[in-house]
Length: 147
Image (cartoon, rainbow, N blue to C red; front, side):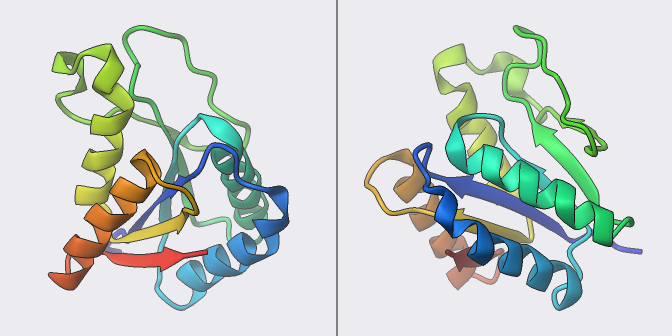
């Protein structure tokens, strides 16, 4: 089976009321798009919400795989959430200065994922990443879902 991958990017202050939309988006990606590998970061409200939604989804869809993106694998101990299959440390990150690690890891994931699910309602890095992914989407390189 060919893996179809999905990454998540969202604002660190994401409100919890988007959970229902997120659940629907994840379910659609599994059942309609055939996504079977999901990767999420480890910082902020959006990532915490995604981790809880993915853990619940894995109870219904035991064949999906869940990974935690770790941009600082060599500098800090990371605890993998229960229900997750492991962590993902992007290739080449050991050469990236720490202040740029999250930015570079997110960029790597956008370049290496089939799908992106995002909650973005502010200016800043999240908006920049979504716009970058949307430019890639116009080239047929990724499919972006905005919540």
